[in-house]
Amino acid sequence: MSTSSPYIGRFAPSPTGPLHFGSLVAALASFLDAKAHRGQWLVRMEDLDPAREPEGAADDILTALEQLGLEWDGAVLYQSQRLEQYAHTLQLLEEKGLIYPCACSRAQIKEMGGIYDNRCRNGAKTHGPYAKRMKVTAQTIAFTDRVQGPQSQNLIQECGDFVLVRKDGLFAYQLAVVADDAFQGITDIVRGIDLLDSTARQIYMQEQLGFSRPQYAHIPVAVNELGQKLSKQHFAKALTLSRPQELLYAAMQFLGLTPEPDLLKGSVADTLQWGVEHWDIQKVPKLANIQLDKQFL
Ligand code: GLU
Image 1 (tube, rainbow, N blue to C red):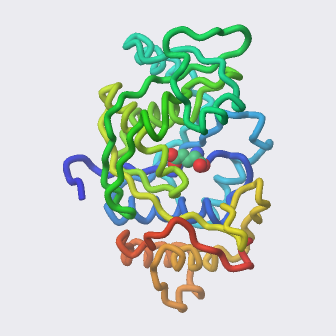
Image 2 (cartoon, rainbow, N blue to C red; image 1 turned 180 degrees about the horizontal axis):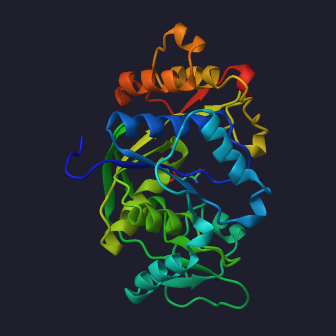
């Protein structure tokens, strides 16, 4: 456990739909871990892709968090209001010669075997729209995940130069997340295991930008009976918030806790208090995914 700086954690939903059980688990795990460390828990709305964000989704997520008693510290940070800062971060990388244009299509990348082969590094033919990629090096990035244990990724072999500005001109998640985690002073990231694979890229960017490295913990994701991650695409059900204790109770069980049935008769504040007192990240199952009970699907 790091004791050098006070704990600052965050929940960073993309408002592509209402809060579902999968995002509740990520919110609750990051909240409990922050509060068990007497830390702050921030909420950041990752609203960088308007075409995927139904009107009102961000507000619906915040209302759901409030109903669940998950009170955040400070003001919500909206990525849509941070575009100048992302442009500045990109410029710092450009000045280091790490960014180049690439107009390759998805089909071309598929032909490369799914991993971009860095072919545009030395001058791309850029007629029409192009993305901007960041050069990676042959180094292996290693870190110890607090749930999943030791991890390593060789960026050249396993990832390739990656996109920071998409062809449609939008800033990519990787750029915004690294800029914002540094800007908000995040010390600890607790999120779904679907982002484990992005972590080496984010650490690499932090190193290039001189940002400090947070600790990472990746928790299992909730899947349906077909093994699909709960998401809008798979028609995850919006949570029924009339009985929020039941949702917190089920989410705690998902995270390896064994809440007392009496909690169901109490308030969300009691349930969360119990969760903070009993939180132990080592109890979180070291699995990639957990199939959910039908009632939440
Ligand atoms: N916005 C991302 C998502 O909802 C999470 C980003 C993160 O936690 O780093 O999947």
